[in-house]
Length: 315
Image (cartoon, rainbow, N blue to C red; front, side):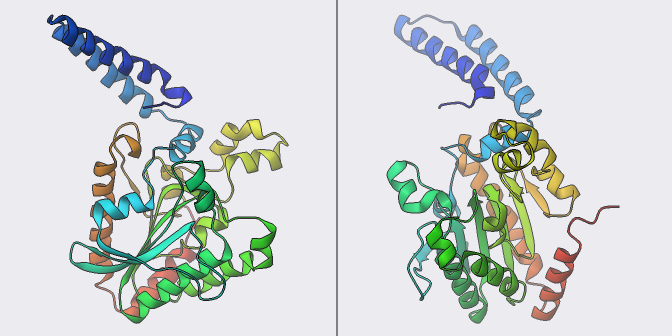
């Protein structure tokens, strides 16, 4: 598995262990004590590295090309997924996946940004950057969920809404603003989880929810670190510095009441154990849906409004 810059010592030690195991297998000799020593060293190195990640390093993990995406989590924790397409106005935005599914035996609506694994798929998915029709499709599915009393689960993973001329001509800002207004009044439980990148209005356009969480190595921010650095210092290379001041990590967001919970990831990031990460997501969703279902619709909307009014207010 290819590592990030700060993971190089870990990757090199993993390779050394693999090479030693192959040597043992080929030569039929017992070096189990040496393997055990290296494995203990690796475990210590991992714990030391990942316990002290900077904000910028978490941003890098959030963007890891092998990190699980929306469709991966849908396949891992949901069943009977039926994808629904189109905004009924312009086209079907492949950067946003929407549909109906079952979580255990509970019927839900699911929405999420979707990135690609290679260049061809990334072009098809527009690198997870939604167009106005993507936000309109998401809103259509939420309104459908409200009509049939289905809870809505949203997976956020986008650098931001697509800023191209065509998107602007078709009302990008208006589409996001409309979602913000309408999601505040959709009378069914909504849970939004940032599973990777949570960039700007592109994330917030599907982020108005009764419960908002982020995975441990995801980030949620008003702007990307590179964009912030370019504006403040006229230098994109200062992105690591920008990441620190943006307060975009789970712990910072929790302190500011922007989110409700940080969902833990396996040591090294979600991409190292997608199944374990998916199980943590499922437990979070099931637990919170059970709590939200105890509120009637009027109380649900009242609490949602109160939640967003209190964001950023710290003692």
